[in-house]
Length: 441
Image (cartoon, rainbow, N blue to C red; front, side):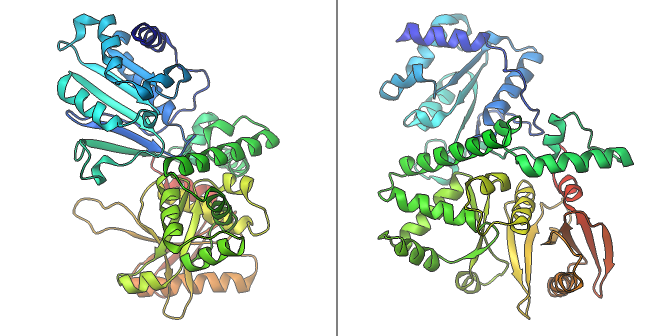
């Protein structure tokens, strides 16, 4: 077993990063005494980030021998799930005995959830060896949230999302920073049409439509299967049906009672508490997200429905029935995911007259300043004067109620400024909104 591990460790040390990796604008680092934990939905690009970090270390002068990198989902390492993971250290230090205690070893463990009780192994590694540790995986429990975990308070977490629009442009070699010329804007608009069709998962970028849909569906099924297995769910068909209903209704309202009744109508004998647990599991997996009403009252939050969004609009389109999904709902989903890359604090708003504002985002604060509240309506087209009047009125009422001087309406192509009584509404095309809201680094 030791010899097998030594051979695999040597192989990983000599591997060059695969060709065609799309550049990411997320840079993971490390802090002394902390474990770097990279999480994110399956297929979002966690492995690419590990490759980027390893390359950065090598370019900074770290030798390959000082890097211990393993993909614990490698089928050749399946037996490790039933053995003491200390064998990894024994194998590495048999290869490089001179480094033990004298040089920093940079450890990278991908798909670490494949290793039972990985927290105990990493904790001992951090306490007994001179090393920096980065782990990545899907469905990782957060040690900071588990009081019994040996890593409580000792991790730095990075949640990784699929490609942003700016990263998608980087992959195509299209410049998107700074002031844009007319030609650049037209090029970006054309590229957005590709992003709209393809979506944000790196693994489908270069596939044709049929292959892309099949890959999306395979990834969706794998994520749902991993959720079912990880949580040992006894009603797998109910979970599958629930996930598909949520994808079908992306951008729409739901209540737990309604979802429970829906599953019962399909013949599933489920409880509300189980449905709540499954919704949490979807969110922990980074697949589906729920949004509450924007309110300070817990009672108001509890009695109002929630809205659901998928991690990727194109994934939702690939796995949905197509009956309920439309361009407006998918566009709203896309705007949500762009905001979610910036802040987890996203809500919807109901004005006193009952009008809805699609998204309310609390943006990260600048030191010395109050947090910015962003109000966003999403509407593919404002060509119909009645639709435009409705969207503007809803947003302007919310601006008054929440004392926000600027609102945003995201459309397919319209670019316009609308003065209202309390401030200004900016009507922006979706491609520009994505570039403006997404972080540049």
